[in-house]
Image 1 (spheres, rainbow, N blue to C red):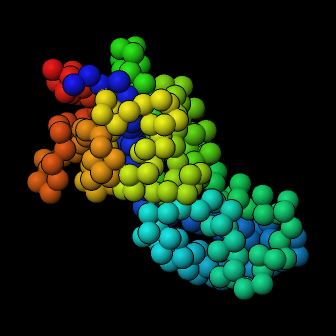
Image 2 (image 1 turned 60 degrees about the vertical axis):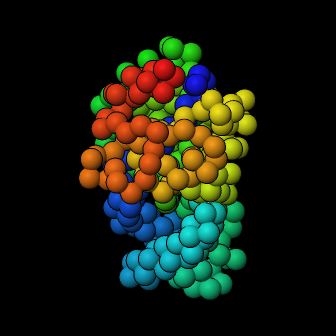
Length: 246
């Protein structure tokens, strides 16, 4: 069957740095929080902030378990509330915006590894006339910052749509996040293919949305799911799409 639309996962597909490694930015985030709060007369110790960051992770985990998501400002408010329950109410809007920025931007200073075939693969697919979209869950780095990073890496312009879970409030594997992405670019599930690495988030999620799936993965992870095709590297994707169409 003809393929018209290709949606692509971010973490583990375009970026090799797993989303869990987002915690490597914790020290920078909390150091900046301490500086910003202290300058506003709202001091918080490094140890309190460290514990609050971990507590906010538990809060986020409960939300993510339901396949829902919240904006980065809610991440920040959760950290502040874990420092002191009434603290979020004492933070003025300008300071909250500065804290959100400090929370979001460490990835731009130390970006993840990128698949070395990503640029050429997207160029080939775009040149062949396919509509491309990106569908990604976030961890602690918001979609707006990930979009900025993609732009710096010259990958952003290949996508007609970039859907991030914090911006739409839905996380993979919920089929709704795939469906709304397809609607945004006028795509149809019957002629769409999703490309991703995760057997649940990508394979099962996209299949539940009625899409075909190409899984990018090593042989050690191929047995638990049944994607339409499996490739070991992104550079093999154009040939895989041709195979699906044949």
